[in-house]
Image 1: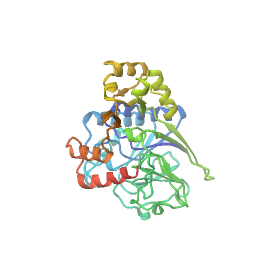
Image 2: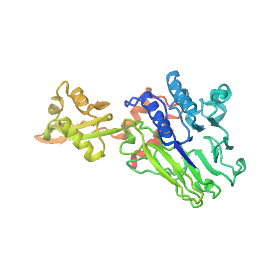
Image 3: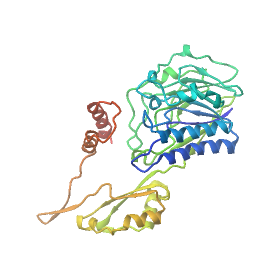
Image 4: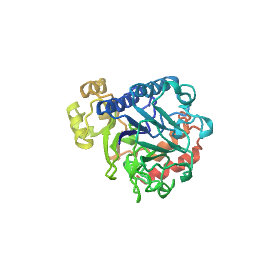
Length: 373
């Protein structure tokens, strides 16, 4: 039994430079991969959109890609994630309710999993046991079929899960993984957490699929993609990670005072050596430091020239400027604003949609993560 699984695709236009079209291209990559490999089943583990109330254009793109896979004869089991709800809970309805209630006749190859129960579809050797976001796990909700492959999919955060790439910070709170650890499941696959990672089960196997797109600079240095899974009667299951073709984030740290402004070749070599990636098609942050005079001497068309020569999606100006001050004849570095202060200003600016979250509690949680960096 072979299938592809992807998760947390989060259609949106991001301020960082990732666009809804980039996201749609990744979902099309999933479909094209299935067609090329003759794979007939896809599992989607939730969060089609970033916003709880996506705009019409994002809905159009997401529905188009979902419909294209359906019309291509590929069966999709689609789980409801927390971002798919119109509000904050399952009772508010979700972004796939129209496909389920109004357009079901047009989606013969789409199974919407918005209840905690077992789902199946004619012609597949797999039964999918779904735990959508917002529900508690209860084994009584599921009917195990010993003659078929049984896969549990969930959308939630497990305690002990890594949620930050650079610091490897692990979430202390969350679901207990033991509640999902049952030998009757051939595999357990999670959504909600964007970092792909193995879950240390004792009685079964599984992990977080991870997001298939790069959303922000926080994802720098991580992998994003989907998985190709083959289930075996002998329990020798095989999982292959396929990297997404989505713009990612790289940076180049450079001392302008000592080395001058780097050429595109120097930037490309730096990125290749540090991030093992190319600048082409990606979002490049130039993190320059030096005296104020040297930094201000950047040629007027420098960023545009670098973008063209690197063939980058975007080249951003200095993200972390460290100007030099002369104090009593001694050269000193000006202390930069801390990450915690940046977060405080950002949250309180009124320019970010907190989606009903308490700003004070959000800052408290964010500062805990920042202190661990």
